[in-house]
Each structure stands twice: as structure tokens, then as C-alpha cells.
Image (tube, rainbow, N blue to C red; front, side, top):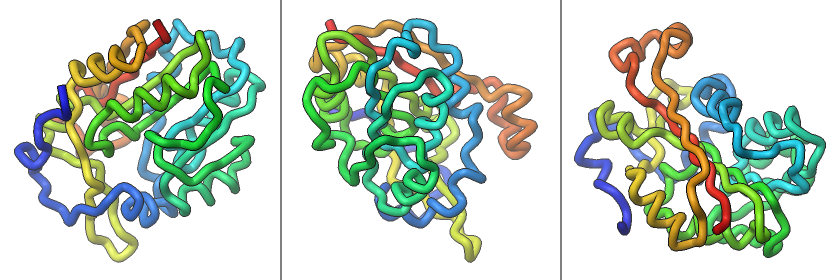
Length: 235
């Protein structure tokens, strides 16, 4: 399946929309104040098939401000290399000091060494890619014969039903959306299978009481699936 449904058919906000690079560059100063751990990192806590303590080296694709790498550091003492498209986010990650190497680049063409990793992780990124084949192919290139590719992203049901793109507020107050794409689970499976992966584990996070407590305006979305985690292994 090449791409999913067009997000424009579901968009209820109609905010000004910018590219991922431009959007995250502007969002970087306030990003940490907006994104809650229950959206993504809590899903990593639920993963049981990854041997975190056996990881030798990890690649953090779309590393952003370093939130994911900081979580990885709580799971083992292994080096983490980060890649991100946005210079401002890389500056935040560099200041955080949780990566061993930081590279400005595309998650679909990282420039990182072939088969040098036994964990590749990509968190809150895939909804900004027009297609998934490149991401999965690059992850497979980075992994050796064994290892894990972990993908955490916004649930396509939430994106379509809520009609809500990834967005943030500019300092002067106006909301801005970052270009958002819908990827159904079938597209993930197709891209992963073509790249040489098999699914090992999947989790979904619902908008629960704690979620609503932190974001009261999301009461109408209670019990909707918000995000998901997929764990893939080379075949």
C-alpha cells in the first residue's frame, strides 16, 4: 500500500501548515512543555520483547530534543546515536548530553554505518513522512542480523477521528500545524515486510483519566486510542 488516506479529508482545525523541519525548528523552545511522557515513553515501558540490557548500540531516528535517548539511558549503559532533520532540536539534544553522536539528516537516509546497531528506535516521527518504505528500509540497513526496530507514533484512528494534526502554539499565540500524514497499520506491515521485518509486539495507548487530567481539553477523546508502539525484528 503506497501511502494512506489524505489527512486533508479529516482535518478539522485548518491551521496554517508548515514542513516538519520548519515546524520543529519553531517548536523546539517549548516542545518539552507540550509533549507528555504518557503519549509515547509510557508505551516503551510496556514493551517486553526487547532485551534493553543486551543492547550494544542504538540509533535514535528523529531524536528531537533527546527525550527518547534519555529514557533509553535508564534501560542500559549503551551508546546512542541520534539523527534529526531540525538544527534547533539537535541543539536541544546536544545540550541534554544523552547521545554519543548527533547527525543532521533524514530518518530515511541517515548516513549512519551499515549493520552497526542492534536497536533502532523512531518515536513520534512517522506521521510526518509521506510514505513508510524508506523508513523501514533504512532501519533494516542499520540493524545487524538480529535486533529490534521500535516505532512509536500517533494512532491513525486518532488522527482521522479527531481531525487533529500535530500542532503547537507560536510565542505570539497562533496555532501552527506540522504536515501530517495518515498511515494505517496495513501500510506499516507492508513496508516492514518488504524491508525484511516481522512483527514481535504491539501496544496501544488510550486517552485515559491521567491523560485527561494533564490535558483537560481532551475529555471528548476519552478512551480513544492515541498512540501505538510496534516492535519489529529482522526475519
